[in-house]
Amino acid sequence: MAPAQEQLEGEQIVASNEDGANCIEKSRVTVIGSGNWGSVAAKLIASNTLKLDSFHDEVRMWVYEEVLPSGNKLTNVINETNENVKYLPGIKLGKNVVADPDLENADFLDLVGGDIAVKDATMLVFVTPHQFMDAICKRLVGKIKPDVEAISLIKGMEVKMEGPCMISSLISDQLGINCCVLMGANIANEIAVEKFSEATVGFRENKEVAERWVLLFSSPYFQVTAVQDVEGVELCGTLKNIVAIAAGLVDGLEMGNNTKAAIMRIGLREMRAFSKLMFSSVRDSTFFESCGVADLITTCMGGRNRKVAEAFAKNQGKRSFDELEAELLQGQKLQGVSTAKEVYAVLSNRGWLEMFPLFTTVHEICVGRLPPTAIVEYSEHKPKCCLA
Ligand SMILES: NC(=O)c1ccc[n+]([C@@H]2O[C@H](COP(=O)([O-])OP(=O)(O)OC[C@H]3O[C@@H](n4cnc5c(N)ncnc54)[C@H](O)[C@@H]3O)[C@@H](O)[C@H]2O)c1
Ligand SMILES: O=P(O)(O)OC[C@H](O)CO
Image: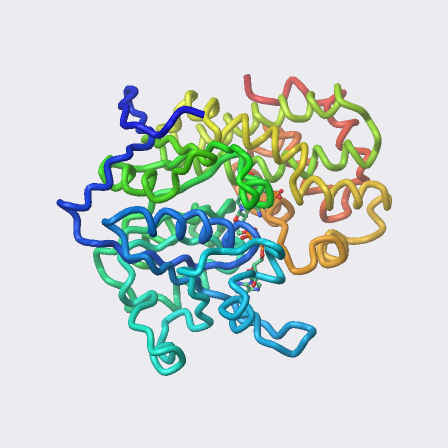
């Protein structure tokens, strides 16, 4: 693969080898989340902070504390073994990754004699399942530096009384900070063993900040491009999880490759239509980045949403998604079922249900109102309802 180099392509930024150490105060990075992708993100970042002079070496990683079957706390095991034995077993994170169970870091000084965590971080990487973010942001209010830069790797959205809210907006609004996003065809276990992947950073206005995120994440096996379309990038990452559920249902029904390709095509069309209805600024070109069609393909081929939906269809919907998630994912979390519910709420509220037959049908299957077979029946009746 070509080495990272600076190159402006219209609105795009690709990785630069220029550290900028001379002109920027050293950044401190904290990763908030330590699941499967959170752990891989910490590993990627930690290998770069060691190489880049403009970053402090240490990467703090907030761990939602749990006690393992051995009786040990996950945080202690991560710090002793340098491995997240529950969510990313077998992979060394890098000795400069420090697991921290205290989100606001009131007690951490006493525990390890360290001197930083969220309160001193200048770059925050949010990477937890989306359903926990509202509570996490509430805990962080007033605890972070006012000028901290944030990035969300979280694929999901919230629907509140006042309407839908993307996770990057939740972070920005609740904490009063700028928030970029990073999405892409990124099955974490593959990146953990350094197989080549691409990703997309979405940014709002500040190109320099986007460049800094690109620098922090890029490696020869993880090529990052930035585009000025934060909503488009985030909606791609969020909505593809609903299509992945549909793809898994089709797999469970053993419908074959043509049907799955049709689901992916119709899904992509609904992703684009929904995104543009939500934000007129969303660009068509974003759907051709890693966060768009590439993530849709990888997630429909090899993701967790697909896997659990396949099992759901094989069991004719008799075992719930929650039960199958717990059994098959061992603590990892699905985003597609809750995202389908959240998107359904938006569609229902705005009178758009018939315009989005795939999104609508996925939710109705997930909640048991329709059988799994409905995923291949709907398209015979409603294709003309999809937006052109
Ligand atoms: N795993 C992947 O391949 C992958 C790739 C790209 C993006 N993502 C996205 O990254 C985000 C995080 O996923 P992940 O794979 O890192 O996590 P995960 O599903 O592997 O793990 C679940 C995490 O949630 C934590 N948790 C459980 N209860 C909690 C609570 N009440 N409050 C806070 N945290 C709690 C667990 O400790 C664990 O760290 C999701 O939005 C996902 O869509 C995942
Ligand atoms: O395993 P999934 O279905 O959560 O998908 C993982 C990533 O989002 C793929 O990019």
